[in-house]
Length: 630
Image (cartoon, rainbow, N blue to C red; front, side):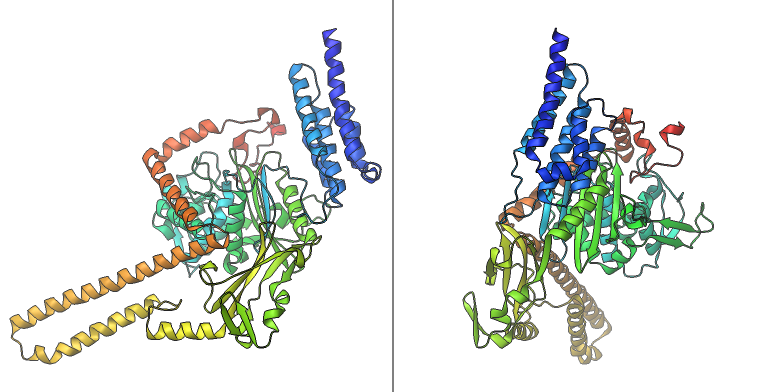
């Protein structure tokens, strides 16, 4: 009797899930889409052979992007299919079905008919976190758990490459691969091309190995070359992310290997990706499909053929699920803790997007990325801000911005864009004019105002309005007084002034020296030497202080653009310093960390047939690790 009752309960849960599908789906979605019908049938048959994740992915992929209603129906269908696949015997199965049916009910309760005044919404992605951002406006088009801190794995290497390229001009310089660069990695993390201690490659070739083949050894070698030590380079990485306004991130190594303190978010990785792919040299390397290294190494006397591993960039078969011709550059990542991670930069019809996915366990990161990018390209348009500011650009007479009035002929609007959903218009956005101290600290020379557009607290873009009269005043002021305006002297000018001052000093005492005795000359020389050292020390300190202030202002500028206050900025800096202090206090030797990491890397899903060590850093099977051949 109890057994029969349990089976009735189980079938009721399944029928409930299928019923939710029927109620929530529109007639067109139910009868016009065979995938949805298949999912409904699966909900009525607990012996359906396909796994719940495969059914869910197929249903959502089949309907995604056709319409919000169909996409919503597909999502409910996939949940119903999960209920069917989960149904089995025992109380545990009953509880699982109940839980999934509850998810279906919650999903069905969502409004299916999209509000014409609402920001477009995605039905969700299968990765735990994801985001898609417009590169030109900086507008977040969609985000799911986009500020949750997660392990990044090898997408860290985008930041590593950016820091390297900002500090190295000559990419043909040769760098050595030290013992630490080769062996200070996790066991099982791979060394695909057999790089060895004593090898030397150019910075350029090391960057190709880093971004295309995810070489951990190259990450270490580049870090040692640029920073002197890995620790110093990591400090440079964290300084860079702070400058970019990344408040969710802390990096502990240049490769992305597992570390409890190596954390970032999808949003921060989007900021890093936007900065990286604006760098022409990084974009050139990161978009290359293959590269030939001609320099021989110990284990590669004929050189190395480096191949890109990002499947959206290398798939040429239009029938493949990984075919996406608009993908331009990107980076893959995988560790047992991070799961699959992916950064992709794409261009389509003049628009540029960055998509980031993190913590994909079912290898849906490529499908998720295509869906995010298509959502961003298909549901939004970019509008030049200047076209909407004709009251400024086409005005005659005077124009008032804030508390100041300018001659209209003196003003120009920056070439910038705002991102507008296709179901909205520019008139639906809120226009805010920021002047004076309310402008971002990164305002260019001559900035009279910053015009910001937003929709329900979501910034969609903006542009600076500059006044030629302000730029002229600032230039003159900087040239005559040296302490006013926004321009500052370069380090070269500072040291030139120092040299001129020292020259004048010696010219002034030249005649007096001729009439002095030998002891007098020695005394004068000593005083002169001390004076020179003092002057050099003073100007060196001044230049260093100036650079630090400029870097701090750039960080504040980025944070201010994001709407972060000075108090929040100070708290973020304090939190970062405390995090570094805690890390140093509890830091252990690299070998100890490797031992701890190996303990953490026990396979989480042994029933899948793959062990964690079967995978390289980017989730590709290492040769010979096919479970069917074991």
